[in-house]
Image (cartoon, rainbow, N blue to C red; front, side, top):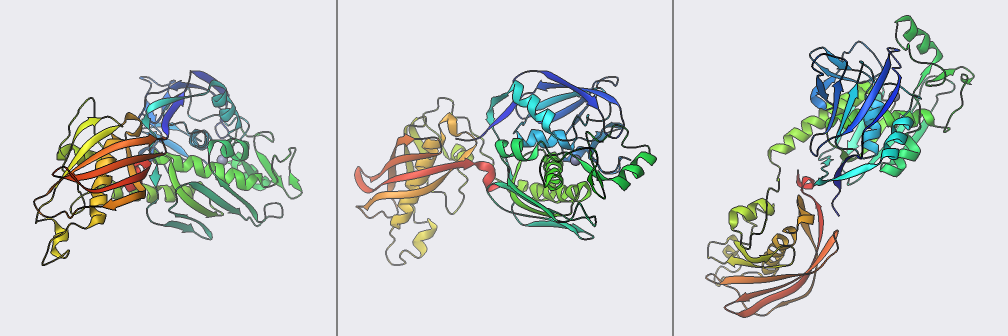
Length: 443
Ligand code: ZN
């Protein structure tokens, strides 16, 4: 099954104090329509300006170090990272966050309270598919001994190594494959921390006003002051929490493997910039399925181009008719001497290669299975062919009629029977298995 976008089931509020500003803040969370993303609304300001939590609104010189801020035109929201992390971790795609001040409350210094509150109201699945950005090429950023690298993968994993020149904060490691369960249990409860010396420094700058020994693990030379660790490697885990929150400002969830060493917000935001660049570069030549089957029984080539990502010289179906959505249909492939494969197969006697007849059947089958509403926004991968038989030579001038019938559609995979006929005689037949993935895979 394709992942669907989610929002919260109902409105709820949370209140607390901003760790840096010390302001008392109330947050009001409201469900939001699909494809709207995460939006903050400054409810304390005239006209209630809204700020979308995305790459375009990240502020790098907010005046407050050690936190991530978003804003536009003097409207600012500080310390969004822990909340953003929870929204990413729990897979909340669309949400309105009303805020009556300029900093998201720190609560207990982790993502735990946000996570608990969201789990309590529950999530509502929406109709649109959830899109991911799959890392296309490896990415890396580094700065003075800290670094983050990212490689393509079909899941989201993070391995973090922390290493401060401090007796309590030497070499801590944490690695996790992120899903809503691992996030909730392994990452969300991990609190922010700072060194005793840094705490003093922040106070002197007039920051850290809302911080105390409860909501911040303050590390002295003997260990954490007036508090207990929730995990032996809670610091490294909190760095993972921060990373997820910062990167969710890309605007959509990502898939890739992350290796991070001694990195923090500054480097996270550098990586975010590179991720955004890569995403934009790939958008230009990406394939976006854009079809609406409604109750059409026949579709022509213009629509096939919206359903299938295949292009010249590898698109082998010209029309599909007698479509019963997600069940059956008949594909047409008009074979012509202009087809590129006849140049070499064979120069003296053109014969359509059998495997390409199978490919044509697979494409016709792809159109039929993807016509089901459940597969909207997806592409079909040809996974297996069984009982393949070639019975007749196909040559220029032939019209192949491919009768496709979906035998089973299990959501993740579908089994299809196809028979290719020329002039009523069977030229080839096969049973095929398809699996499905979001079209953003091709971005
Ligand atoms: Zn943090």
